[in-house]
Length: 102
Image 1 (cartoon, rainbow, N blue to C red):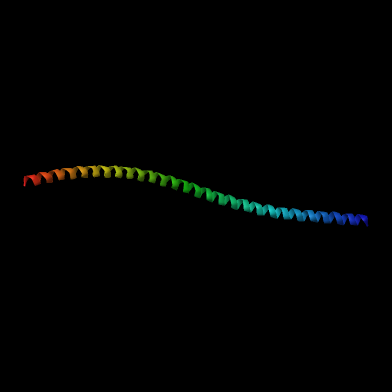
Image 2: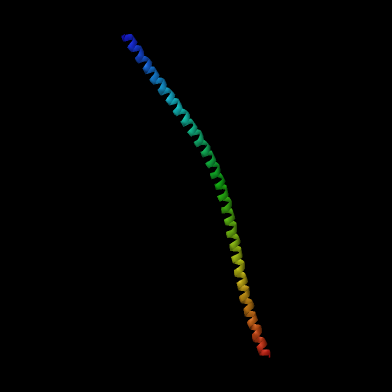
């Protein structure tokens, strides 16, 4: 009878260990799937980040070009303002000379 009891105990212990092993295997599969999903998401985000970085670089280059164009335009505008002042002065002189001539 003791041998029978010991055999049942060993079978129960073995069944518990098999259940534990099956549970561990299920958890392993779930974790493996989560890891694969996480890796896919990481790759996707890395690609997006790389694309965004390139886009930022392009926009930065465009901004630098726009700043350069703005400086050129500003310089040209200043030159035109100086020329306008000179022309206004010449016009005033001509108007004065015309008024005297009349």
